[in-house]
Every structure is written in C-alpha cells, then in structure tokens.
Length: 124
Image (cartoon, rainbow, N blue to C red; front, side, top):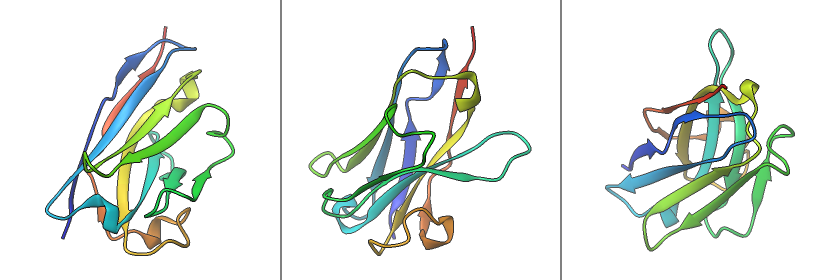
C-alpha cells in the first residue's frame, strides 16, 4: 500500500503560480500512475491532470491545458503539479491519487489510493 501526502497549496493571486507536490511513502511511486483531481465547494471532484507510470503519457483536463504541468521525479518519490496563470475558479482542494494501471486516468474510480488534499485559494 502506498501513502500519499500533498503539499504546496496556499493562497495565490490571480495570474500567480503554485507548485503542488505529491510525495509517496510505503511503496515507490514509479509503480503507479498518478493523477491530480480537485474539488471546489459544492462541486464534484474533477480530473485535472495525470501522468503514466513511465512518465511518457500525460493527460490534462481542458481547463488545465497550457497552464498546468504534471511531472514526476521517481528518485524523490514525488509527483508535481505546476500551476501557472491561476484563476479564481481554480480555487479548490487538490488531491493526488495513485493507480495500478495506465488507462482510464481521467476517471477517479481508476485510482486505488488518495492523499488527504491541499487547499488552493486564488484571490486578490
């Protein structure tokens, strides 16, 4: 079993940037595909980005394309989500999740393990 911990959330101004980290323990993160999801108040949890086990395949939700970048550093057992050009509508709790497969990564039901989430607030 892998344990995931997100960090890097906080308050950013519109147009600003944040980098979220998802650090794994218990098992090496290279054995998993990792996705990022977010959940705003009174909304469903939605897919943001995902990276395959090898890192060769990367997927983004439409709202993330051109602004968010997902990457992984298997040596650090960490997956990152770089978020640029932040908007107030990006305000949400951001979760990382790990999956034992490389398909269906935009579907939250694909994932076996979830972190506790980190709050991102975009406001002036």
